[in-house]
Image (tube, rainbow, N blue to C red):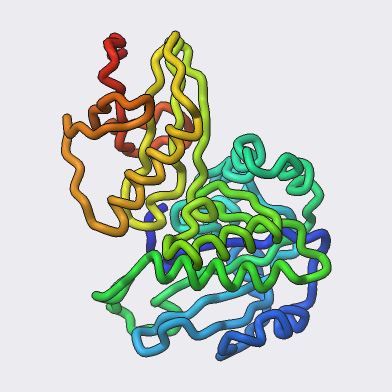
Length: 307
């Protein structure tokens, strides 16, 4: 689901449901502009607070408590129409795919306890940004000077503040399939501040997957939150590339797309992992779930490129 009613989403997984009043203290540094009761279906909204983000352009962030486990499956129109409708309208994040929590736990390389911790949750706080809440009927989805990095940063700061709740288990970015501990989020934010770079690792995961062809890939998931393509590096069988070098390459390409607005074209070449040249190719269907258009890189190391 593309950006629409909501433009970003982050979550905090909880041991148990909490009262909306329990959120007010950790959110004391933000401007709370309203409070609302839960809707009939928690899939659309639990009891919530409305925080000011960019009120001059109707930019607000809805923070609600959902007293159930994260619905990792989309459901069906016949058997689970409410969950299906919520997924279809981006209620669990505009760029979130079913199975995101399971994949986040399986592909969390920096926190060994991620999968175990995530399974302990029985509720979550959902943080969603929007420019359409209470806005005019024909208002644009995003304002003209929209900056997804600034917006993601704001949403992430809210999530970090809520990780101080006694019942908080972990940070979860569903669109980027990222799980992180409170300490991990703090470290990323501090490094981002000192290096003057965004905390991409909190927004977009880097994953590894072996393919039936013998090739393997490392890819990003979550770049679309920043309005750019995800990227993947295709690794040929029998060739060893340092995973850290590949990850840095993917992050560098991602940041060049976001920060500099660099346009990468089909067959563009740049130096990458292993000190070899890598060629760009756009692929309509990514090699690993979820399916999406992706910017793929192949090493010019003499390997025969798969069809």
